Image (cartoon, rainbow over all chains, first blue to last red; front, side):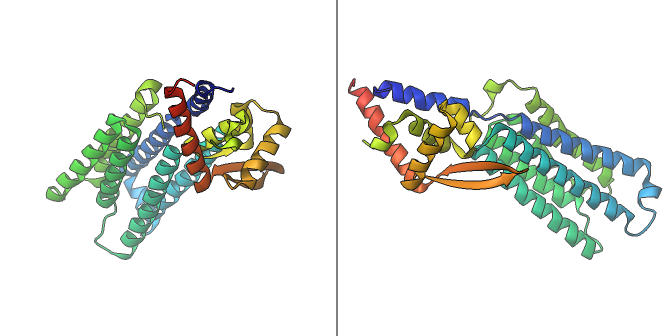
Length: 195
Length: 92
């Protein structure tokens, strides 16, 4: 490997070896999409059971998502250890969603202390913003469109306060997160960002 | 040109680290196609010159070495790469 051409080829072969694989990101979207939809449908179907006591609904909507957070963090750490490297793109996305998790905890904590504050609209708005950022970073339009849909949806909610927020959760997360996540999962690697 | 990066293993190590925020020992062994001993020596040399940062941890009783590039390493790699392109354009 003496010539400059050989050295440039060695550099590019190493860089191509660590191309970004976006499938784990899509698995996160699919997992969270399914979890929130199943929880919302369960809440709608067994409303009297979930809202049996003053704190049962709060427990339901905090404990299960916290378990979900732990599971996704564990999955992402395990995946990173398995492949043996972390791209800058993965790192940026990890930080963005980490901040979203903290914001989610903050919004839930505020909703517990204020009586007339429902956490669903601000969480969906924030989720929409994060989806737009993620979609633009990984250059995947369905994720960006999902985010735009969620922002528009939460804007619409302001003028229609009577809508059942559990139904809003189901529709918003299905169109904003689950469908784009499935689209990313089944997309061809060539369409994705190269990290 | 930086003589340290003329070694193919060291060049491949920095090429991998410039593209990733961090890489573990096994991944570097795979991309450099070097033996464990040779890779350890080259990593040590890059660390001594402060081109890379090495973090050693234990995971389930097994040693786990993670490497990342330093600011100096990034500058040196960029300079080396620009020089390579210039040489290539001049037909050398």
